[in-house]
Every structure is written in C-alpha cells, then in structure tokens.
Length: 132
Image (tube, rainbow, N blue to C red; front, top):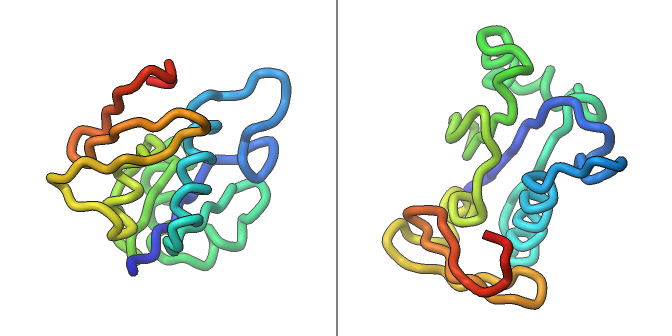
C-alpha cells in the first residue's frame, strides 16, 4: 500500500480544526484522513508548527520549501513523490493515492450520517447532505 504524507503550513493545532474561525476545508480534510485510516491506509499529516522535524528530515520536503516556501504548502507526497501542492487533496484523490480506488470507478463513502457518491476521477460528490 502506498505511503501518503501530507505536509501542512503552520496551524494552530495538529489538525487546524480549532479556534473561533474553523476552516471548513480542514474539517473536511480531517474527516477524509480519518476515513482512510479506518480503511487501513498508510496516511500521515505533518504540521509545520508542531512537527518541524518531519519537514527537516525529508529531502523532498526540504527541496520543495527552498523553492516554494511555506506559501506552497500543503504538499502531498505518495511514496516520496510529489503528488499535489498548494491545496488539500479531496477524499477521492486520497483514496486513489492510497491505492484504494481506481480512476474510473465511483466510490461510495460515508460522510457522517449521509452517504455520498464520490467520483475518483472528478473529485465531485453528490447527495442530499449539503456538504458539497
């Protein structure tokens, strides 16, 4: 199973889901990572403020930061190869990166009490939950 590592900019806490103005993208991303972990995926996230050692010890991340700076984060690596920069991957992208979805199939994934159909190819979802 591929190793997925997400390197994030400095956040107020490990997840960034804290404080009075919570970023909905971080709430969604945290839920998506939790879902992948439940499926047994090898995923980790590293916050620059709370885990600077992970940034300093990874050659690819160090090189990325020298070129793009922390403004280029988040950085997603799959088995050490840059897969995505500047935005958080969607659930469908994470599933694909982790080897849990094919590019052409539709995945049905739970999101709280609602079930959404997520296309691994487009990253779009549909459903009546109002999350999309």
